[in-house]
Length: 585
Ligand SMILES: *[C@@H]1O[C@H](CO)[C@@H](O)[C@H](O)[C@H]1NC(C)=O
Image (cartoon, rainbow, N blue to C red; front, side, top):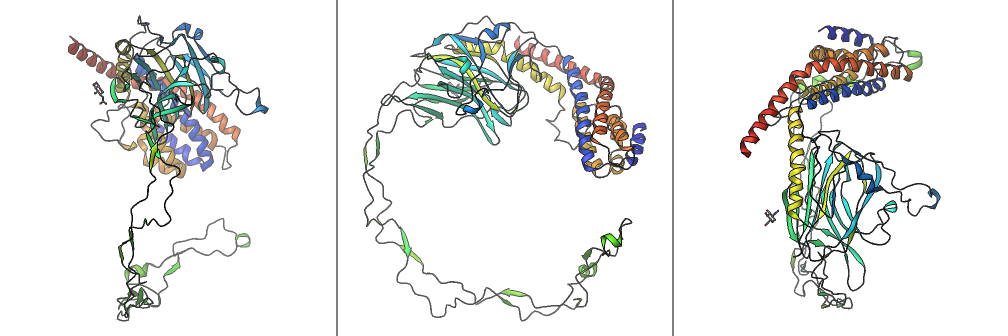
């Protein structure tokens, strides 16, 4: 309660204005975030994690982003297209890094390729040692995607690039011809795992993108997701996510526009005859308006039978000046004019049937008929919907083997995304379903178990209890969530009325004392005790800096608080491990 009293004192002396409160929220949010990320790291480092060992599997292209990755991958320096004035600018300014995950790390020492900038275009590619020819073969494309910062709007798909002489990794761009595009793409409500292949029309030599009609949805989680595409020599394909089969089908049936055009098309020269009748029903030409049909009768008329209720208060006004309103102390008659209390509804009217002059109400007119129109009948001249006659398609061709993709020379990521920290890893491009599965066992299966163990250890148990309001949270259940939620609510109330906030959430003052409230109180004391004048930007910045420093001290105290939580998490993990060993043996 010590902190509660302190905070109450500080808050009552502070003048918290909305704009100042916003700055406070930023600074305090920052402080509580650093405390929470520390809580996260304390908890996660208490869990033991497997260590990375490179795979011994071989494939035409297999990438685990070990130390020699830069010998293969080259970020694109392609210039912006159609813009001569900015000749020097690269279109792809987004940075790439190869690093370990920063969120829910699964395997120690396991690095991946990471998109480093939000709201930026990124492009990077890697040439294959030898072009991959899939003629009469199975193509297996598999890779991991880890959305460390979630995904609101952006792509996480890969492109397999056409092998041609101009395959210049430095110039890789959206214009580089690809053979297959595969992987997640999300923006708002649109969420799909693309499978698009470019198909050459054997008659015209032109390429067309063939899109999977019914793509599965991407998994928007912070743990790793594994995307697998298998295209078989019999023209069937399968898409798997996390090893689970999501789609089966045929390249010849499930794509739009379809690989092979229709055998017959509408004759473009066929015209609808002038006298063709397409109206199935028409107004009855024989019908006439009945004599007694009055189109002018109004919809509503005055209810002549209505009488004024006995308790109607004819002399009471419906609105009165607010009797409780008082002239503000700082009201200046000279400057502000005469003070007039605001009007409020007359409470006497609520108790009676009504106030003011009484008039007879309106009622629905029984004589109302509206505009007359004839009834509809079947059209005796109706010939049906006209359609042009079919002729043989002059552009017809049949490619029975679209799965014989053109040679693939490289892989590239060419992406725009609102969210950064998307991580790619364990890319397999080859012909063996079995090897891709083996790689999954060695990598994805190991890391997902470890990631989920950490997630379970740091998350509150929400399976059996519905989401709680911030008021029901307990510090020990989930310190991270507790700090965030409580502080949020506290600040929301404090913005409106600081004293009310402390009264309403005394336990925030008490339990949160060692963490966020210390910082909050400090902030308010720094910006608020100077007097009634609003603090300057400098003062706020200064306060935010001091708050950050305080947050470091706060961390030590938070560590103590979570150590028991971390022990619990380790015990939970041990239980899981023992259980899965039992299942395995
Ligand atoms: C696709 O086919 C495979 C093999 O027959 C089957 O195991 C899998 O469940 C199928 N997937 C879907 C989504 O139907």
